Length: 112
Length: 153
Image 1 (cartoon, chains in turn cyan, brown):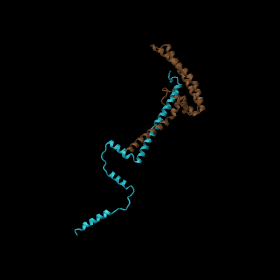
Image 2 (tube, chains in turn orange, green):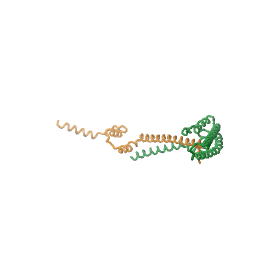
Image 3 (cartoon, one colour):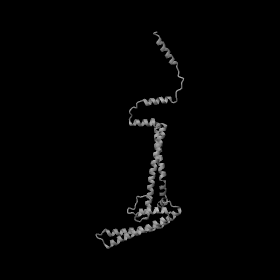
């Protein structure tokens, strides 16, 4: 009676050592585990510089985010260029219009 | 980290390049006008959508007007000097000052008549709708009290 539990433990341990799972892991199992670990970790308070370096090093290289970042900056560049260009174009044309009138009006013409 | 910095820099360079390209394209029409031999007339052609024959006729009128305008400038300058000379030592109104001021007013009126006649002639060489738009714009520039120098055509 006394030896029975020990024998069971021994046989269970032996069985566990010999056991090899034959089921395949689901796709991206490891990545999923790491993601859950990441999520579970309580984020330590970072400095501003630390946040920036973390963002640049770990977050920005993600393909979707990188593409969005570049698309947004491109859109900002195009919009700013268009707005400024349009304004400058209007200014230059207005200046030419004023020069035309100064050419014809003796009271506005620059005196030599 | 290196990849992140590369993406960061690439984004900024792409934004600057996009800004430069779009700005360059948007200002190209005005820069092209400024580089023409007679930018003011080139502007007139572009602004009032003149065909080449219309532009040729307007240019001829312009060329014919300029010597008259220069002669008027010369007379105005001479008259201004005369008025300044009379006013420099004056303490009372004199018949000479009155005559000089009257001559200045006459010159101004003659100048405005000459300009207005030129504007009418130019507008008649343009397509009717553009001619009206030209007249409305140029009258505002040359005949309003403040000469309307800040308004768009």
